[in-house]
Image (cartoon, rainbow, N blue to C red):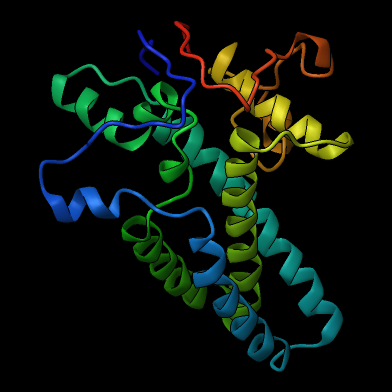
Length: 225
């Protein structure tokens, strides 16, 4: 990804679009994915488990969650962090993900807008229907649960001082991606695929090396991400 010249540590943003409709829907409340997608994944799970044996369904459900974590990694590494050469490519990249690295604490752009997530969810729904037969509803439900968890974790890493072994690790792991090395730690909800694809940061277990981001203060800082 192209180097950023500015990083704001305030909960602030800048307009992305001149079109008021697009600009409005580029912002989203962080609870929106939970409200929209949890009922959908519950309905899919309810009807999906009626179609297959229970144990097979449970395994398929976890397979759906695992599949999301892979898609999460692929999108973050190869779509969000591609290195554009043209001016048009750089503008598109900034719209898609560059703004998040410039304004990482912007609370209204930390989860995926519905204008993006709904078409993607629809696409994967029909792909799963074609690929997984009678298991498609269960796998889709697990997949969507993985997505909702990812969006919630992503928001929390930027705006909540997560405590405990897991919460503290996920927060420090993602903040390192922003403030130390954006060529590693592409997984947000899990480091699994970073291990597999060898993009795990070598210093990940040393929590003392995590930049101490005070979420109670709004400090601007210059940084390279």
